Amino acid sequence: TRTLSTEDWNRWPTWSPDGGMLAFRRRSTLRVVDFSGQLWGIYGAPYNDAPPAWSPDGSRIILSGFHGIDEIDVRSGEVTNLISERSVGFWSASWSPLPWSEIQARQPDD
Image 1 (cartoon, rainbow, N blue to C red):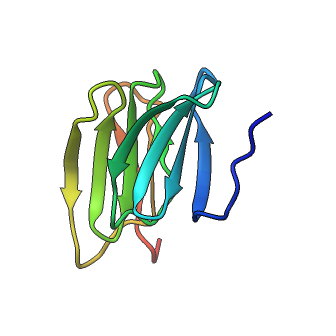
Image 2 (image 1 turned 135 degrees about the horizontal axis):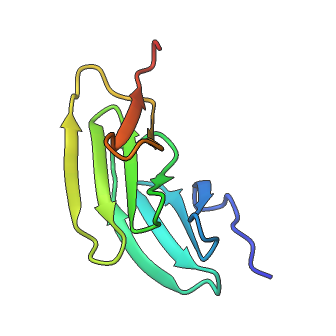
Image 3 (image 1 turned 60 degrees about the vertical axis):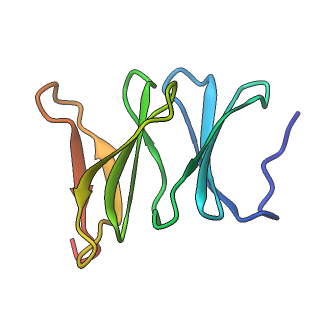
């Protein structure tokens, strides 16, 4: 059994849809590990202040925060800024179950 401690500011652990990988925030990064604890990737996410959200197929993760919203391709590590809104920010974002709408976002005052 492996334990994710809070010693290194580990927070917001989120399982992938198939339960095979875990994404969590550690300080200013997003880390992704598989079920065995093998590290898959470390992605810079200095201004992301909300839990990560997996895509329904587990291939991508979105991160939201006061900088806007980023999408990370888990396999390639490519980061795409979807919304850049530093003045307002977003508290949380999630994948929409609707096939024609990718993400839903909530701002702090919503």
